[in-house]
Image 1 (cartoon, rainbow, N blue to C red):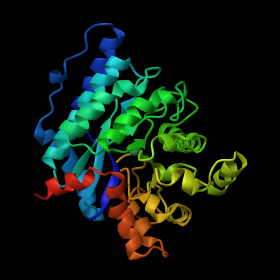
Image 2: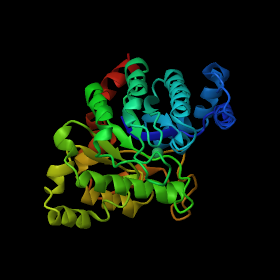
Image 3: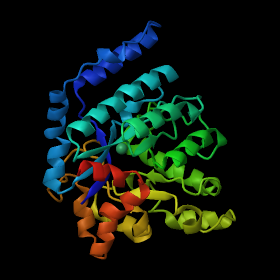
Length: 342
Ligand SMILES: [Zn+2]
């Protein structure tokens, strides 16, 4: 079985964005938001938008299950206020839940959190708990910068995050550190903000003793860890200069990297530098880069090919990247897969 730990419902029916537009208009006009029930999407709409897209690509590429979350850019935590974020997370997560019910063998849910700039993340606990305990989700996307590119909130290692981390540990679910869209024109969303955020989050973790306080807390840094694997020597050197423990001891029981790197040399570097146990298969389809690579004739986000092409990976290594590591990092996934097959 091949598990893709990073996919978004980027093809969600248009009614979802129309609801979002109405919600934000109501916020701006200071009138009551539309009720959740006013978002009408049929099972057929869900079926069709997935069958023609993510499910078809899973089949074509030979992957089985995707850990599936709402569109990441569209989380846009900087829009509206905390109440707006809460409703938006709720309807987005409910839609993911329906997708997991309609395609129970293809998707397992991962939730969006109702973060909002300047609001302590403890406000996300109730929605996290609902998604995990009632909807069967196995993880969440945690935005290290809810301001959308201005970094106005404290780093991920600040104590303001601790109540949410306590709940993550308590529920035994990891967080993928994943920003939303950028509203800062200096940072292109998927080309700059995403990768800079991945790198920034890693450096925050390097500087802190967060994992002494939470030895079982697990973070996935997506997009191959941003610039981290490429600059691993710099980070090892910085850790040494700053009298921090060596990186494996400091971070590698808690921090994992996905394989959303869209060419052979990138995935080769990732798997050479980062221990296999810390690498999780992912493609982030359909989303960040949709086109076909003219050099290979295959889609950029068809990442399984790159892993299959790495000459030094053994079958056992690949089994870890495709399956075992994902199950280790998402402890609730085993039960979700068992339910899927029962
Ligand atoms: Zn993503």
